[in-house]
Image (spheres, helix red, strand yellow):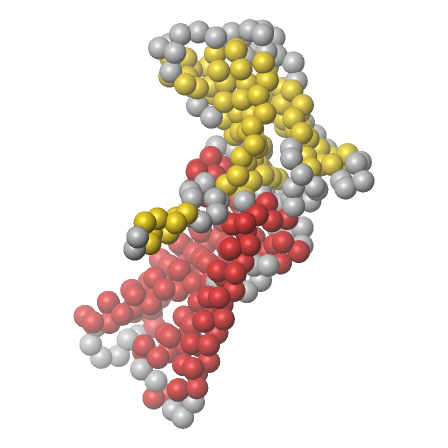
Length: 293
């Protein structure tokens, strides 16, 4: 997956993926592995108004960490009751550290973005960098703050990645559902082998489409994201999910509309409007999914 730096939309993506997996039992609650693991690195700036570039080294990483975020929370040396909103320029440079210790540029330029610091009692978290897939075992990020003329007490940087235990659980979870879906698909095809397709009802025809799409929705290629350092597995995952969900929406539209329509269902008047509406939703979801990955 491609490198995304300092984008506003990544905050929503992170917050959505930062939920913990919990399971309720009959005699209490058992907590599974955390989705996100964090490691903090704090820097004391001695109330300096002139900030120098800060270099931060991540912890050792593996492909099971999947993605990497670097966030920052600014602590101001002033009353917490004061509300401040100011814009400043943030510069970010990301370098990858290979296993032999050599440093490689992740991107051959420094990223400059204008960010807004909002403080109302406590300053809001700022996403400094987001790496969609990990090519190196460690990363070094150099962060610079320009035109930020405020008395700063602390700069709290936090690394956030997927928990490897959660990644392994996700692999097994998807594998089980791929196997179950494959078995159900084979049983369904076996049960209809004696009937001609002309004798199939609308429900049987739709099930013959939805079951293979459900198999793809569970993404049998998901383990490739841990074996190949590429954005292709993530793109396929987004593509399969959007295709299945849009096909399911199209199925329900046809079923509910079919209750009111009696007789022959013409392609031009019955199916074409639904394909057009669902096709627009599919195109939007695929575009946004691929753009984020």
